[in-house]
Length: 167
Image 1 (tube, rainbow, N blue to C red):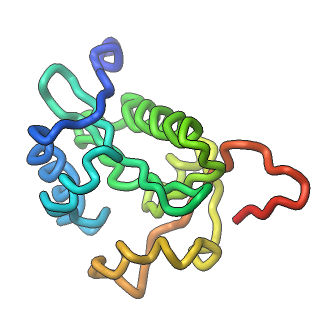
Image 2 (image 1 turned 120 degrees about the vertical axis):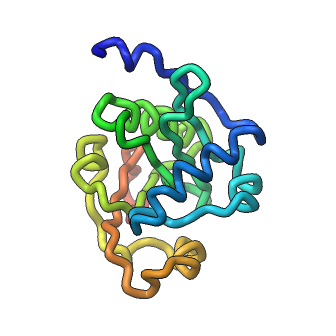
């Protein structure tokens, strides 16, 4: 099965993909590993998502949300359990970070339980409190709020100019 990765195609999602994405994301949400996403929210933010496909099977998804002028967030990154550790998460992160660069973002963060994975992608841990308050809107819907146990991770996409602020 060494060729499985070559059979993966990344593409933006369509409205027909929403039920599959909801099943994938909400499967992890029932385990307490990510926020649940309603069909309504998925339709609303569909343009933020990329899907990883093996033929017509959705094997992974993730999204890039614009948070502020130069800040984005990786959200709802999920890979089917049987497809994990095959490079699919890395493919999606690379795709989403390239998207962030094309949008002109300087930094991207994620709130995650997969700290080692994000570190392997160049992210570093930061205090959640160092992130702008604007990010906490989704957190209000989380059953763990206000006792979040996720790790905040951030990556700088461009070197900062002297005197430029960074999180």
